[in-house]
Image (cartoon, rainbow, N blue to C red):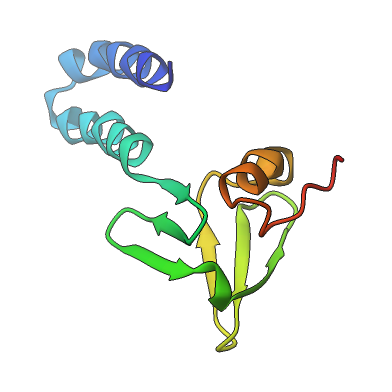
Length: 112
């Protein structure tokens, strides 16, 4: 569904690009948005959590996660035992029940 929105934005941008050809590089914006939709994600299972950003993939075991931090208007962050933080794309407080289920109970569900 998100790709449909990106296609609509690209279609809307065609009129200015056709009128002013020097604006053609603007069509890269929908392409980059589509790449971000495909790439940004957090994948969790019983043993590990994997955070994928645009350029990097980081996998850590749940035993290395000390806790989760939620910053208003941002994705969740995993506080690791070595003192660093790992951003968890697409994980918010409202998606915490899915993360709790995927982690096999290692992350508590606050709604239960």
